Length: 211
Image (cartoon, rainbow, N blue to C red; front, side, top):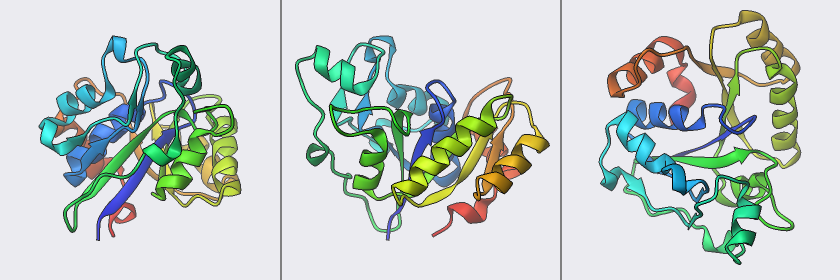
């Protein structure tokens, strides 16, 4: 049976793509980003291929791709289109493979006039790995995101904190958020397959990512 993880974040630019690359490198996973905006600046699929050093065959094409770096609902509207959940179906995988699915923006980013990123997460049914910054402000943003996921009855595999290590914020998220911090990504001098795998080995709970 395939293993699946949906990487979402507490905010835009939080580090979802680096986390996705890390998981692809560490778990030898397939990468898929169903909705890509901002392709005029490059795609996250290309970034993950570069950082995790994986070939295109270990990625899957986007279901929707838009050039402007704006919210999915707005990018689709500008393109005179509409994002439909029914058009977004998980790609076929070989038995035992792992897929890392990366969202766009945060949990409550709208994807059309009535649905949000959390609805896509629920539609695909993969447990969430929530990317959050480790610094000031993370407690509020992380607890709100966890509450939204819980309200939608979406399973959460855990939270990954990105940035300088902060034990107090980690403890607060685990205590008040009733969730588990399953990994941390410290500032990296270089981002490549080896450095990402080293971070996973040193700072992640590998058991959280087993079947």
